[in-house]
Image (cartoon, rainbow, N blue to C red; front, side, top):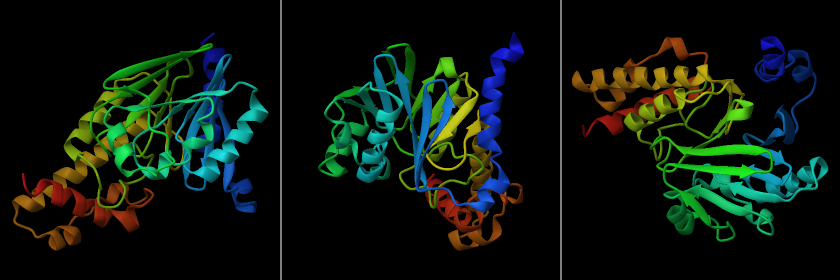
Length: 285
């Protein structure tokens, strides 16, 4: 019983975490692709961005349209999977590189975000981006057809309005930009709240899931939440020590190294900027 229950999930995780090296070496990945993640749950990728859609017996739930081109392509692809309309478009947070293009689904969908995202979308988004008509502050449930989906706000992290989408029956969590998989944080931590980010990750660790789908990069597991939290904690501790010792920003960037993370994606290009972002955040404190 146990083996039959978990075998499909283990197969999905194996295929996503360890794709065929020979196949990837022989042919480059297409600019747009769809991958089946779990029962009725699909990942769609456009260049370096990705999100998910969920097919139910009474409509489709889509996350992050990404761009007008990606959304147009996605709408056509969804029509090959199901004849059900898109009922909900969920914005992970307000950053334009994830939410542009939602107008493609405006004929049938309602638009959902965290409450703090709505004013920023009104102010900063492309004028054609639909403004969310459904918002929440802590938690929101969507029951559509045979699927139960939970939207959860775990506090400020990469932004002040990032949500996670949790599908308990598929043991899957979708979280954009604040839980990268074996990847350092983006550049100099723009629009971020490092102390609260760490606490936000602790909240995510308390959820029950196996598959972690980030907004960029490879698919992970719940273990990757802990790994990234420990990275932020190590970065914060190292920068704080340099500040307490009177090091300037340039001295801190030269002196701080976290060799245990050197193999992570982005370390060579972004680690010094991570140090800079954390230094500027901690300095006033």
